[in-house]
Each structure stands twice: as structure tokens, then as C-alpha cells.
Image (cartoon, rainbow over all chains, first blue to last red; front, side, top):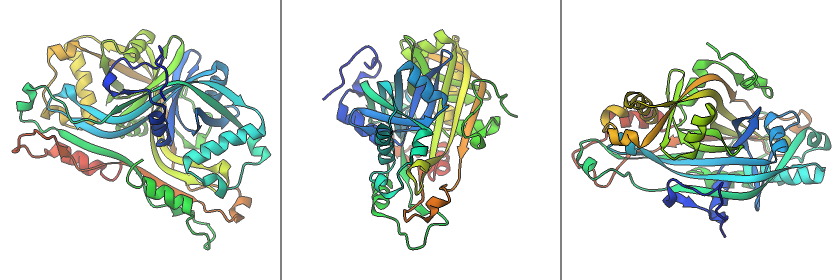
Length: 221
Length: 221
């Protein structure tokens, strides 16, 4: 299944790297703890990082009641966000051909504020589950008071695209004769072994869902 | 030296994490290979990742002649961009207090297109130097033809802010009695040992500037 190519999501530069495959885009989203969201304040586009959740073709974010970003998104009803994993730095012999290997996705969607506690819980569960799978069942659920202090936004993905670069260094034929070093420096984002908080009851061991998260991501998200 | 707090860059939520210190903000920028840039297309704010350079209070980006983002920035003259390093995931006993440790910066600036080859070279050198320090002296400089095929933008930083979170898990006193595991999962972005490109002349060894980059970042950017 692919997102339909429209005016917004069609990639014009670097078409060989482009993908509109829904599964591939979801995979890039799910490997990202953080996305960067664009929003307008007084006509100027701004960008901020935020964590998020995904359930099917819906994304979820949350913010405090007075948060400028969430309120701007509620007002404007449309949103664009992006995620990117840097996988390698590519150092060519020519300055001009330096580049990176990466997986990135740009999402366009419509924004809906979730109003009822039941809806908000769906969104927050999605955010926590995206953070660490299965975590929701091993922490205290939000209270009514906490839900009232949070705005939860549902973003329905309307269109999207990904760019995936995973190639060798490329240089012009003539430049290959030069005596400059060329190659790749691999980049990884990894997690390290979980550290219990200082005042944790001594009988509580690291649970399975945390160890699974560690094993899955210790060599790279 | 600090950026003056104005309407755009003043942090309203999480004030304890806020910094306007120029040196601190530059340090966060310099540890980032990629930033996310906000720009308007047909009135809708969009966001894309891109690499960049920094020289003093100027940032540099580049794009092909028809690139929608660079052309939108040239037209709108103002820009907002952000960088973020995720340092740890904080798992509290309550769903509501899950959060992350991070270093992020949001930059507001004015955009100027660099037109002459001399100006463009300053921008591109800054981008390559930011990519890998000292790399510029060990690769082929761009030709006139390559410079003509590239737009180079200079962003003068007008205001900025950083947010730095580096604290323990926080739970309400009552929640500390719960039997849920709480703690931190450290996150790092690292580089691995450089890999020479397949057709590199066998007598070319990994140069000092690449090994220094590896040593500096192998345990985290």
C-alpha cells in the first residue's frame, strides 16, 4: 500500500531515494522516539521536537493547556512533521559530493483535539506504547485531574513520503584519481543498559518489557 | 553572553530547563550533524531535515537551484530551525511523568542568499567543516560549475533558546510507593570506525582529521 503522490508529498529532488510505501514509512516513524513538528506563530513557521505515538494511520502528541505549538495546530487544523535517522556520513574526494545515508519521513496530516477522557487515554496510551512497547501495562494510568491538565491531539496521516539513502560514496570518475581519502563513517543511535531510579524499592527487578526494549535497540534504533 | 529574551524565543513551559547562553546554544548546534528547518509552502508550515554549518552567529545551508525549501526561505527572509539530542528516556511509575533528558535548541534568524562564488565558498566551507572538522583541506574544492548549480543561504541568528533536561525520574510522592519499575534508559548517538570506499587507492591511509572525528564521537555526539 502506498500514499498517493500529490502536490505536497511528491519528492522532486533525489527521486531514487523516494518511497511512498506505508509500511516503510511506519517503520521509520516507529524507530523514532522524537519527531519535529512545524507550526505557525504569527505567520512565521516554527519547528519544535516532540515525542509522539502511532496507531495505524493516526499519530498522537500531547502538550500542556497553554502550549503554543499544540494550540497553533488545533487552530490551523493541518500539520507537517518529520523524522530522520542519520545512518552514515559519506566523505567523498570532492567537497561537493559529501553527503549522508539516512532514513527520513515527512508526514502531512489533519489535526483533531481529543476531548473526552476515553479518547485522551487512547492517545496517551499510544504515546507511551511508542515510547517503550508494553510500558502502559506496567505504570500507573493517568488520573482525571492529569487528563484535564493535558491536551491530546490526533493527527490523521493524509499523505507522506520517505527518503532512504543507503549507498556508497560517489565521486566523479576524474576525482577518483585524487589522493584524498574517501569513505563512510557509520552513525548509530543506541540505548544503554537501564538504570533503576535511586529510591526504587530494592525488590523490584528490571521488567521484561524494558529488557526487550534494551535488547532491540542496544545496537541501533 | 546571552540572547535577549523576546516574544519568539522566550520559553514559557519548563523554564528551569531554559538557557539563552550563546556558548551553550552553539555547543548544541555544533554537536548536531542535522537540523530541522521550518518553511512555508502555500501558507502551510512544513519541516525538513538538512545538514548545516556554523561560523560565529551565522549558519549556512545549501540546496539545488529548484529546491522548494531554500527558495521558500529566500522568499520569506525569516527562518526557524531546531536541533535535538536525545540523551535518555525517563520511565516513571506514573504514565503521566514519563519524559526524556535532552539538549535542544531553537534558532530564529534572517536569511540571505549568497550570490558570489567567494561568498558561496565561505558557506560551503562552513558546512563541510561542521560535517567533519578540517575536512575542507583534504578534499577537492567546488568548481565554478558546481557553485553555479548550488544555492547557498546564510542565516544570521537573531534570537535563540535552548532547553537542557538532565535530571532523574520524577514521580509524585504517593506514586513512589507503587510496585512499578522506574528508571532511566540512556540514549547515545555514536559513530563507528571509518570504512574506506571500495575503490580507494590502497596507499591512502585514514587521515588524522577523520581519526580525530572518530575518537571524539565514538562514545557519543
